[in-house]
Length: 367
Ligand SMILES: Nc1ncnc2c1ncn2[C@@H]1O[C@H](COP(=O)(O)OP(=O)(O)OP(=O)(O)O)[C@@H](O)[C@H]1O
Ligand code: SF4
Ligand SMILES: [Mg+2]
Image 1 (cartoon, helix red, strand yellow):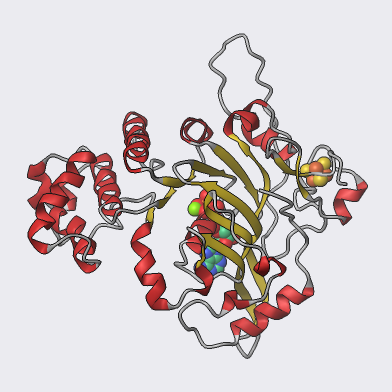
Image 2 (cartoon, rainbow, N blue to C red):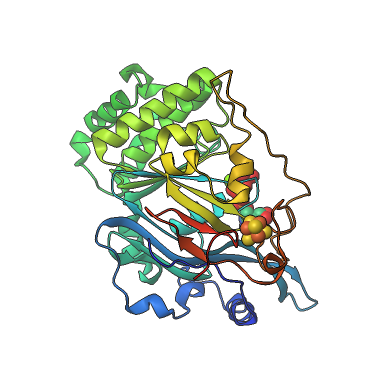
């Protein structure tokens, strides 16, 4: 990734959003249509997914006429790339925009601005029919496996439903295909006729994984897929996801609060704070050498297996500021132990400090 920058949002953004919020809802492309200086640059052929300056603002505080007076800047100028077959872990405190990032990338909700290239196509620009044709390739697995399973359908039907809708295999072969996916996900064939309520949380999550993978996706957003499960089951599901990734050449965004899990499964890690990426690097690099003070604080809470190691926990002071009215300059300045005068006024650039290790912080050279 090159020269991605996190800049302070300006009045023009808000004007654009105000205008967009007054339009009739359409197929989701209307809010994302803002022209960008990046339009002329072709996508990186080595990346399955490339996100440039992605924004997702939600209207808040409406006035008498129902027009938004302010916006929740849930995703605020995020850029990154993911190579096929790898995993990007996304971490950050609750409310920093992880789920919104995942959902916006999948176009489950329209972007406010920016570009999302999937397999070379800017999906913000696809028409509804084109997007529907692409949908099977981009799947999501949620934290709560129960809410995403229809209680009235047996497992075989749940997994087979979308396969039928998208005509991925001939009808005569569908049952065999579903049984094969179930087997890959560790679900015995006699589960085919059984209903979701008959299963444990771990088994339900396997069913959700099978349902997503039955569509032969290339890319899966895993949004806290193991957070609701017992620790012993978490490891089984993580290993299943890793195993399936290898067999099916899957690319993941893996969202989690659990840094040990993220370290285990990710090739690279992005750290989000108030809607923006503050650090992004290869997993080994970021765990061995966190550069941003927020990352340092977040990672200092991970237990270290070596009893002799001195793991000094950094306690963050203050609450997370509102994403409606984020602090000026560096958004983290209200909680940072290293805050300088410049941090309160100037947003630091998101710069590469070697080996693709990107950081947005005035502690490091900005030129
Ligand atoms: N549909 C919506 N309308 C308005 N605000 C929203 C909407 N969805 C999310 N938000 C706001 O956007 C911000 C980011 O939310 P998001 O769910 O993406 O955070 P998160 O990092 O996934 O949090 P968690 O770790 O708790 O799941 C929050 O301030 C949230 O309140
Ligand atoms: S830019 Fe300043 S306030 Fe922000 S993280 Fe760096 S040192 Fe802290
Ligand atoms: Mg979330």
